[in-house]
Image 1 (cartoon, rainbow over the protein chains, first blue to last red):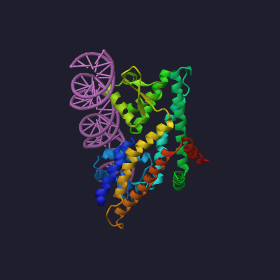
Image 2 (cartoon, rainbow over the protein chains, first blue to last red):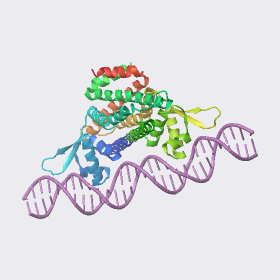
Image 3 (cartoon, each protein chain N blue to C red):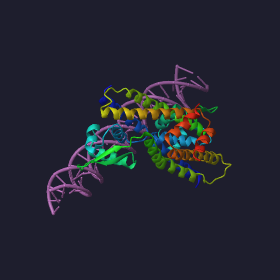
Length: 168
Length: 168
DNA sequence: TTAAACTTTCAATTATTTCTGAAAGTTTAT
DNA sequence: ATAAACTTTCAGAAATAATTGAAAGTTTAA
């Protein structure tokens, strides 16, 4: 397979994975494009290569900056903004873990903890089933949260080294 | 907070989390409803409690069965089908991990491995950047895949015991 | 200043996903 | 057989999400 075809397939695959994970497809595609690009790209480049409008390109670049998955890069003698992606996969994984923890895990944990204090008689089976599920979930999600914290502090080799060692 | 209000909030929160993870909101809500229900519910119950149509209820129940997150339960002397959710959170986590691995990780891994064989001169920086990213990603996703395999075999206490011990 | 170069915004459009509900299909009891 | 009880299907409707593109906003150089 030639490079042009391979790039296309890579960008497409990453975009599909993105939507399956609740991430805007174009955002994932812009990220993919920058991931495999040896040099920084400007908005025009992205519009051209992905066939998207200026507004769309701008919006998704901004969002990728929010996630800190990409950075602006200034090219001397040029007024345009150029963008480069963080290339270290472990660093990317940490950024995504950190953001999803903040946006998803933490708010849910907060709600679950609030729901532990539902009033009612524990001999009522409705109440019992509810509190049991909420307690179990809150306990589980709490452990997930702590596990992500650990991963955020860890070094890649040590992390996978330890995890994969368990399998034996 | 009273039970009715708490239930509503729980179902709503779970539904929102579902959409953030690329899962149909109603499917997540049906799951939530069954998770906190002490007894099996029939399609009518779900239509009523979630205010959804028969078609919608049926479709999402079927999909939850596909995931094996819920099971049919027969009530003697009744022709209707009743549904119960798996309540063990660790088992639920394993089911979700297993399904997402199958639907998302494995296909991506396959594509990435295919893309390793892109033809072209490694002294071309475009080719070099592409193969480097693809190789790093493929390596990383491969480790993720193996980690999920391990989790699928593991016992909850041992798993979190080991993971959380690392944090110290 | 000011005008060119560039970025951001946002109302309107388009695309995608989800939902409805009635009809068709299936099963069971008699 | 057949009719009642129940489940599934699916074309069209509704809801949601993403995209466009032109106008407004901002920055820079001279």
